Every structure is written in C-alpha cells, then in structure tokens.
Image (cartoon, rainbow, N blue to C red; front, side):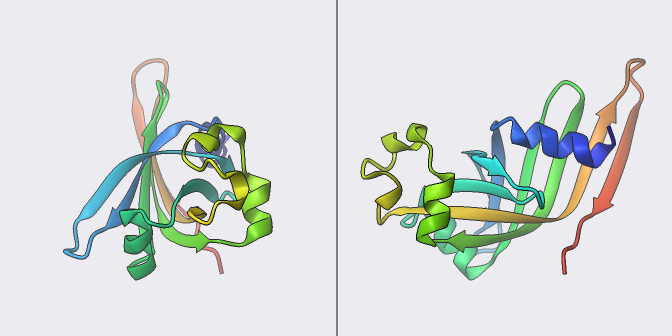
Length: 142
C-alpha cells in the first residue's frame, strides 16, 4: 500500500485529529475533531455547530490543516474547508453518536458539516529498523 493510501486509511478509522483554522489575527487554531467520514475523493468530513468559532473562521478563510499520527506514521494535510448545510448531505453523514451535540438529530438547525478538501499531505513514516522517510504529496484538485 502506498503512502497516500495509508494516510487515508488511517483517517477512515474515524479517529480524532487536530483540525486547524486560521484566526482573525492570522494564527493557527488547532482543535481536536472526530472524523465522521472520508469519501471516495479523499475529502475528510466533520460535524460541528454553525455557531462555533471554527465555522466563523472557515467562512472568512477556508484554509485548514489536519494532523494525526499512529505508531507507523505522522501525517499533516493542508487544504480548504467548505461549510456544508445541504439537508440531504447532512442526513447521509448523520450518526446517532452525534445526538449528544445535536438533540434534534440531522434536522437540527445548528448542525452543519465541514468538508476538508486536501491539497497537500506530508507523511513521516518509520520502518522496522527505525529509519524514517518524509514524503510530500501534492493532491491539488481542479
């Protein structure tokens, strides 16, 4: 399995990652977020509140970063966030574990999705004899 495939398989495990937005002052603001899905185009999906600071930050500046790691690799991705409020997409992405945050379910007016569209990934991998390799892969989508 190549590095790109390994990275997106890691993200598909619905793990908690660090998602960074850019504040009005120009600083990155990383926060822990649970990945709810990775689609066939390797877009990474999150659920959040429309009232959250991150939604306001992404509305102003869609640039974003994701960081995560496991025993085999450390990963950072750069890309852009789209704020998705489309009703059918929210229903498709809904899972009952989110009800704690959105008691009205997929119909909650406060529930929205963040779609992270990756443009670049960087992975540091470690092999069995503790050598490491840094790979940078450009994933720009047209």
